[in-house]
Image 1 (cartoon, rainbow, N blue to C red):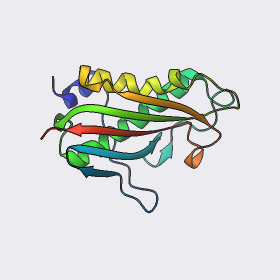
Image 2: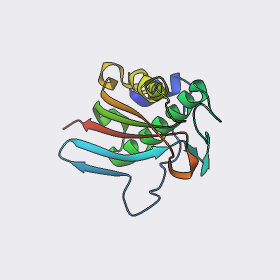
Image 3: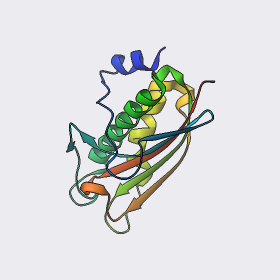
Image 4: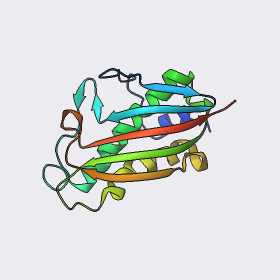
Length: 153
């Protein structure tokens, strides 16, 4: 099934691609690899989930925040490649979780992004990953992801 049709089947729509918030570009292509800059959980210019997991956010709400990050990343991929159908596979996801000191459940949070990639791309959505807790993220965002995908030749 086409990834964009799969998103619709899941009841999800891609947001407008988020603009870069500094001196960088949202994506860089080299060969068949597309490197996606970090995306935070923002929709329509507003943070959807702010604060630290273990304080203002729970693992469940942070999981949703990671899903928003994934949708933003998919929007940037579509803008760069023309269609999500051009994705051959998701290669790597680096996930960052704004969390209290000692938080050790970052993988459960970043599953929000990973699970969405698998739902959208099937086996091609399975990827290598890191999930790391940090003491702060841009604009107070609860999560941020950075992704590498392989595009079809």
